[in-house]
Length: 121
Image (tube, rainbow, N blue to C red; front, side, top):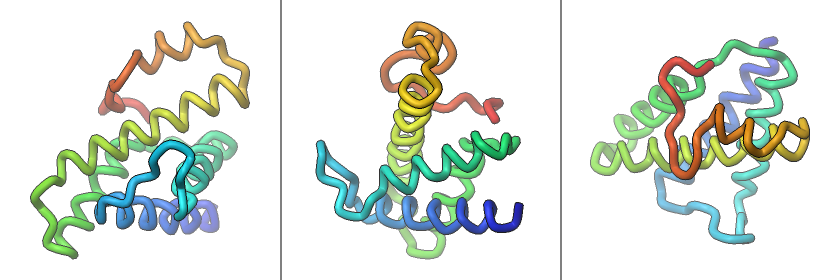
């Protein structure tokens, strides 16, 4: 359990810092393996059945980043970018790895650029 927490924290720190610097992956370009890091977080949470509030975790991590590096401007944009990024990773896990029907995934997660619901674990 401690190892899982450290793995999540390490990957989340990487994601928040690189997104915070504006170095988001585009198309097939992902030089910092950010998709792999986010997928690893989602898979750890899924496999271990951790009751984790991802939205709150992202809010806490981005606020800590903003305070540490004095980047308060654009904080909401950063949070939204990370939420969208994780939602796509969750969609991929459910549809491709767990073979959950596309319509069911959309019914649960919503379509398009929906944000993580504040009560979702």
